[in-house]
Length: 449
Image (cartoon, rainbow, N blue to C red; front, side, top):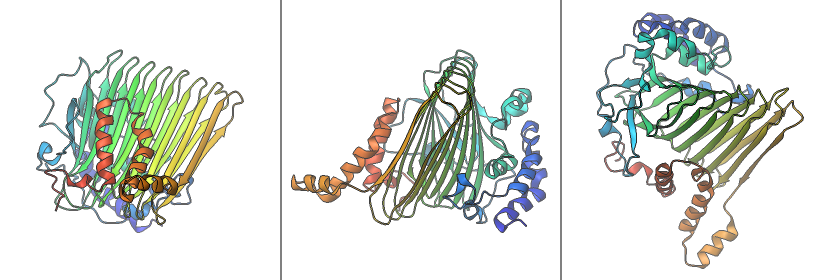
């Protein structure tokens, strides 16, 4: 029998599926009913499932949220809602309001010929054959209840397409704005297609414009062709009433390169999942995570790097700084399959608990079925160095300032790995503000009291 948290979504779809389909393209609707049946069978993942052992998913989805199934227009000025005292990067700037692509504020800078950044629902209606080749192909609904839920509820999102051998010089920045007068659930879909030889950098930023309870599910599917290069930066700066569940699926072909970075600076409950699969030899990935949490915030990162073929390289570095009664979790599994010889993999998770009440759960894993590999993994959990604090205080630095400097130095290793220099500079500034408790005091922020 379905629990209440699942039953409300089963009942919702059964009563509203016609409305959902009416406002969605046929290619998106084609997989809804199967996804619904998968969710009916799977339900929300319990903590008995290895990949979800650290976060109670049913509790996240238990509250009764509103949904904008009729696709009513939400009044918002994205430039007013997104204001920060750090100068913007020089980017091509796009907005997604809740889970709908915002087409009223498009950048004036033209993209290279053939590049598409647009509404997923719109392009699915205009070119269903193209979308049908990729949509819901690596985000499998029969394997994960959260992905299934998103698939039968999502009505729009973002499509990014970069043609063969096209290099997009200017970073594409997407601001995901949560905006509502009532508690709201949004279900966002992102499809990224990088043709062979394509190169592009993307910065996704999550912000909340209203002091409401938000629940956001997101599924990203990224197809990275042979010799293609994808840089994907995901930055969350929401608030303590926001719950975010994001599943990212990446498929890499031969000699491709992926640089994936997830940065959580301010949140309520965050659960990030990354599944990355090597399909062609010579590919490499760099997966980095940076987490700063305090009060009762929760951040759970779960990764799977699947070496299906040989001669590929994976690198993972996740760092957490936890204060107050914050709770963090990292579980990273590197799977080296039979025949995946000459695999190189390094997985590192380092964590700093600044208080005795902060909690960190860490589980790096290697599963190797090949004999000619170089693989290593490790994790650490510690507190601030008392000797270093004493040394700095002896030289006139206050204890609070010394604590801040040590935390800042600890987290900098992840930030310094980010290749976008303007983003590095911005993050250095934001991280310092975060440690000083000033991140939610940006001028013009609607949440400031």
